[in-house]
Length: 322
View 1 (tube, rainbow, N blue to C red):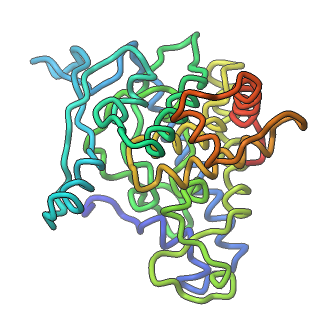
View 2: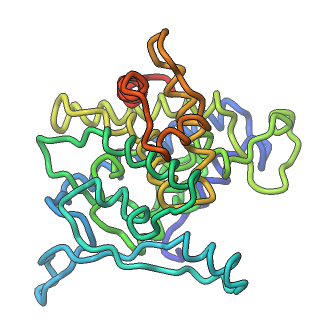
């Protein structure tokens, strides 16, 4: 970082909170940051593959093939703390084999840690069902390089929001397109991960939080719309009318988080089911989150419910303005 002249994006993004900047000035700086970040992310498009995993290099320093990748095992870490009473907080990693199946990337942690109790098993089954309905693009390579931690702390910008550098590339790998380089930045989707989202309305009145500043759900939806439009322009320049992977990523990224981190699973799925039924066609049975989890756990989901869930989920994937 000593070679990058700039400041963390967090300081600019919340400049009206941290530095007394005019809100209009902060807004312009946010737009500038999103434009330059999107321009950087689309450059990863040139690194696409038929197989997902970690890039391996030959003696000539050129990429030779795809190998297994290392992933954080959140479930093992939780077991270490709460089952084995070990306070060690070092990450626990697990090797994920290279695969040509994008869905195998999504469900890897569910396969490694099968649930035995009724409710967790039902949630895992619901997760698998939703993931199975994600439509992967068919006309391009299914995997692409993407930043492994696409969050606000890893972007260094100028005072005016222009991107100067991106850090923390450790663990970069080829991942499914639906989780790839066109996805939303992580700080724009926090409201769909309720277990980790710390927004409070008092922040709008300048009350300093105990943790980090957060944007309201309305503000996050607004800036998602801006980033989606930026990515749409890049997409048209590059390859025409492919699926809107950026818009889909609000759903796909949070499903991936729900799989990987059991702490977030229930809250994300509850939010997801609420939003699915909100866009569903009126009429028919629409069980709430708890009932739906029970149905999956008992392998007793009514055909009409499954069809309605499927249609509404597809609508949610492509819905603008979320």
